[in-house]
Image (cartoon, rainbow, N blue to C red):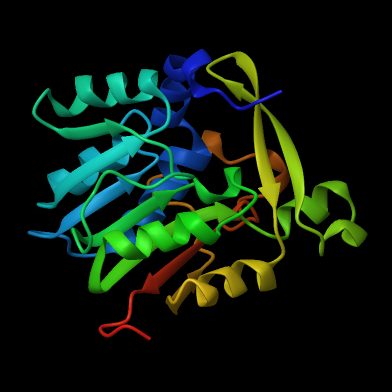
Length: 235
C-alpha cells in the first residue's frame, strides 16, 4: 500500500482548493511565514497542483517547483503556464538544481511522507543560498498520539491516514515522529531553527467550515510549521 498521487491527483487538487486544512489553515500560514517574497527565488518542494507556487508568484517571487507525481506537475503547469520551471523529481534522490540556487525553499506537508530525512534535508540545504530559509509544515507530532494513544508518541512509526478527497477516499502513508526527532534532524542537517509556529486558521475561514466540536475555536492540533535558516558560512 503506497501513497500515489498520480491515482487521485485531480481529486486531491480539488479538495486542496477549498478545504479548511489546506486553503484556510496550512497555505495561509505558509504565506504568512514567508512574508515579503518579492524578487526572491523560491523552490516549492512537492508543489502538487501549484496553489502555493501561484500565491508566491502573485506576491512577486520567482518560483520553481517539483513533485514526484507527474499528474500533479501536469496540473501545476496548467495553472502556472508552460513556461513555468516545473519538474518531476523525487525528494529522496539528488535534486536537479545547482548549489545555492534559491533564496527560500518551501516544503508544504511533504517531509512527513519520508521515514528518513537525512538526505532530503541535505539536498534542500545544498540548493539554498547561504542565509536562505527553509519554510515547512508537517503533521503535528501530537496528532498521532491523540489519535492512537499517548504511549505511541516517542517511536518514529508509519501512520496511514484515511482521507476524503472531493468525495473519494484515499490512503496517505505518512510517518509520525516526535518533536525531538524533528528538531534533531534539522540540527544534524546544519539548519538553525528560527521559528516554530502553531497558528490559528485564517480569519477569512467561513464559519460553516469550522467543525462543531471546536465550539468556535480557531486553533487546533493538525500541522506544525517551522522556519529554518541555512547558515551564512559552512559549519
